[in-house]
Image (cartoon, rainbow, N blue to C red; front, side):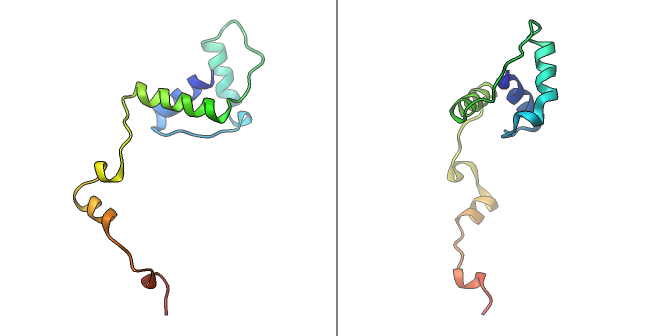
Length: 93
């Protein structure tokens, strides 16, 4: 059930959310009524490892790949990533 919620939120916003169950009760009820018509009355928020595994599954479904900064950015953005900053310039004298 929470996988279905995470999938729907990811499809809509292309990002994952950590949510309190109270904040998504209306969405949970919609999923339960629409998909699981047999009536679930007991459900619990997934543990962190379960949530992360669900996110990994969703990323795989959407064919996302892990990209490092060096692999993913080229041109001006890549150059900006490689610039070094003098810490002294961050603080006024």
